[in-house]
Amino acid sequence: MTFPDFFDDVPAIRLRDPLAELLGAAEEGIMEYRYVDAVRLAGHSCPTVAGAYLMARAALNALYPDALPERGGIAVHMPSPETEGTIGVVAQVLTLLTGAAAQGGFKGIGGRFVRQGLLSYAMRSGENDGAVRFERLDTGAAVGVLFDAGRVPADMSQREHMQAIMQRRETPEQRAEFARQWQARVRRILLEHADDPMMIRVVPLGDTVA
Figure 1: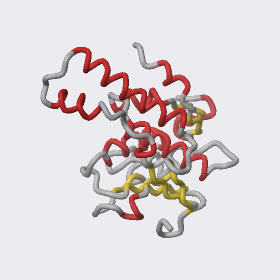
Figure 2 (figure 1 turned 90 degrees about the vertical axis):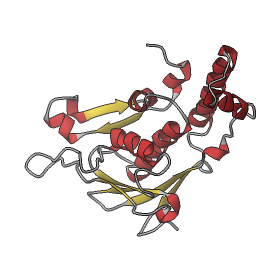
Figure 3 (figure 1 turned 180 degrees about the vertical axis):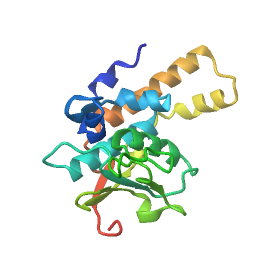
Figure 4 (figure 1 turned 60 degrees about the vertical axis):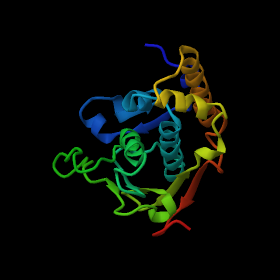
């Protein structure tokens, strides 16, 4: 299986999962996720998947500045309903990386390692100014994270290529160029702006985003 070379250069997310340790899935529960794992989950690489990956990374770095993040020890609240826009896609990537799951998640063992219900959705759009809320279960520390893909705009020719694709009249050359430019944008997001506070904004929370 061949992926774009730049996938290997994206910063990894390293964390500890106590459930994985208990069940012998990973020594000391330590696991490392890479961008390609999010791509395999979603089935594609796009600014939304890249943004979700970077949002999780930024939140975990902020909530666990001096220790490995604990997978399964974080609650995630999405700012809009699951079916709105790309909210569902983002949530799936965040479940992969944080362990936080909706009502279909793991129910735990003897009251421990519960993942079910750690992921929730807003009843209306734009709660907390559109930020995704991440909260540590042990300390209550929380941050809101926002992603602005507009910091890395698409190439102007992409609109024409997209229209051709949507109308099913694209040429092989247009298809190839569309794919090249699409991943070039994703590459810039992941490698040139991974720590750009104007693209990934992290806000310490009380009850709401300031």
